[in-house]
Amino acid sequence: MFKVKFADIGEGLTEGKVAEVLVTLGQEVKAGDPLFFVETDKVNSEIPAPVTGKIANILIKADQDIVVGEVVMEIDDGSSTAASKPEPTPAVKGPEVKEEENASVVGATPVSNKLITRGLPKQTTPSACEATKSALADCAPALQEGNGTLPPRKTNFQAPNPEKHFDVIIVGAGVGGYVAAIKAANLGLKTLIIEKGAYGGVCLNIGCIPTKTLLKSGKVFEQTVHKAASFGIEISKDAKITVNWKAVIERKEDVVKKLSSGVLYLMNKNKIKHIEGVAEAIDNHTIKVNGETFTTDDLIIATGSNPRGLTLPGFEEAEKTGFLINSTHALSLPKLPKKVIIIGGGVIGVEFASMFASYGSEVVLLQGLPTILEMLDADLSKEMSKILSSKSNITIVTNAMIKGIEKNKVVYELDGKEIKLEADYCLQSVGRKPFTEGFENIGLKKAGNGYIEIANDYCQTNLDNVYAIGDVNGRLMLAHVASHEGLIAVNHIARKKGIAHAEDMKMEFERVPSCIYASPEIATIGKTEEQCKKENLDYKAFKFPFQAIGKALADGDTHGFVKLIIENKYQTVIGAHIIGNRATEMISELAVAMESESTISEIAHAIHPHPTMSEAIGEAAEALLTGKTLNL
Ligand SMILES: Cc1cc2nc3c(=O)[nH]c(=O)nc-3n(C[C@H](O)[C@H](O)[C@H](O)COP(=O)(O)OP(=O)(O)OC[C@H]3O[C@@H](n4cnc5c(N)ncnc54)[C@H](O)[C@@H]3O)c2cc1C
Image (cartoon, rainbow, N blue to C red):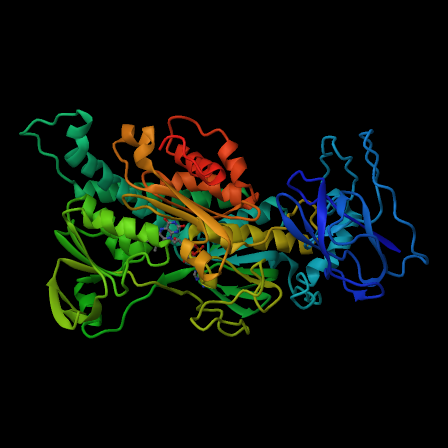
């Protein structure tokens, strides 16, 4: 008989209330099936069955308070004959920790079964998976079933040549692939990584890092020219402040080179076998590169994405003449454009608009939709649109229907009228497409738009031993998502192999922060207010402006606000949206708050240092908690 105990569900919680019992006496349950729902002041959890069997005894009912360690049910799993009586709740007085044979389970993760005495400090115990090899054996079946959603792992693969066989092969050394490789090596997996281009992929070479480097130079120039006087810095009338574009590009290349070569250094430091070449999958265990064949237990595809382009009249010709460029070209232009047209008002389009404008270029942003950054909380996209439009050298045209390109003119339609606009360059930033060449013939399931579909939160594909991480799975095309997914996939692979210190991580797309590094910056996480309304959620939102923050005044930049959204029942943050100077640095606090399901009182009570921009988070939290602000 398996005694199911209410386990330590984390968050430092030692008790909860049974919200609903989800099984009945005599019911057959499989390991992982939900047994009951528990509510605490921080989390609500569905507690799954740790074993397969028949419900022999239910010792709880709805609304009952339970404590960690309490026996809540008995499941006849064939291990003994009779159902036993419930064990008494642990005594309050002693700190002893009583070891039990059977581990309780939360989600897919067996957790410590050690009893925690109410009112005394929690014993820090390793999770059951980490604690012992025998506990690992318990968790392996659940893992192999992929949390009940995937077929059991095939174990019959025979490596033809052990020298050329790896625990994991990773294709693509972008931020997804290279971080996965380091983690795999750290976990003791024999790892091979293959890269056909530059180490660090898009992010380090032609994405995040070079754009931010160019944005920084532009900001320095803009501040010197337009803001120095407001800070009391005088520049004499005859002083010439100019952009040395060549030097700007050289600085960017220097930064990129340092980081990209740093990746190669990390591969060597971690003794990861790496090959430069184009990888091709022969089957889900076999990879060919530079004419050589390697085999692997598990394969991680981290091949990333390329810019997408429109196929409209004149576009192909304009690409050949160099008038039509993409984000990669825009990072290395031979000269700073006087005027640039940007097609696409998404994240990349807005960052480039902000970047070119900061150097003094005239920018026209053509957006097909009624607003730029339409995926954002409407308060942010409106504010961003207002701030960008207030700059003398940025024009935003919404609802612009692009018709084509004629030489160095972009043709578009607005309110039924055709308009032809001339510029030095036209940058199109209309999204990206997955890079899946070489993986066409192994039976991978693709989503309608060509991305490799992931079947679960571990980034496994429809092929049990093949994982797709980063841009290639098309879920959220961000660098930190790619590397986080890499960690998840590798930990999952290591757990399948019974590696004790591997962790059970899962991808939670609702908790991914995303940032826009324009001027001002934007950073968001969780639900927008529009989503809350659409989903009929019981929520509350508050916006605290940076105008009332001392640090913003000292920095000479009071644009923007912090907007927090909480749900009313448990008062946890479900959305956070920041626009303003340093927004991208501030969002991490809210990412941690969401990950740990902090309540708004915990955020309000956390001491925010003064003077910082993050005081606006504390102020917004205070307003949501008490209905009143302090400094407004
Ligand atoms: C201009 C721009 C700015 C951006 N700014 C940000 C930002 O500020 N923040 C952010 O989070 N994200 C940003 N992104 C997005 C971010 O760069 C990507 O989400 C991230 O790089 C994806 O990483 P990845 O590892 O999935 O793929 P990639 O970085 O694309 O790496 C894939 C690698 O696989 C290699 N490869 C492909 N096929 C094969 C093969 N068959 N054999 C061998 N090697 C192969 C490629 O050469 C490449 O190096 C930006 C993107 C762009 C374009």
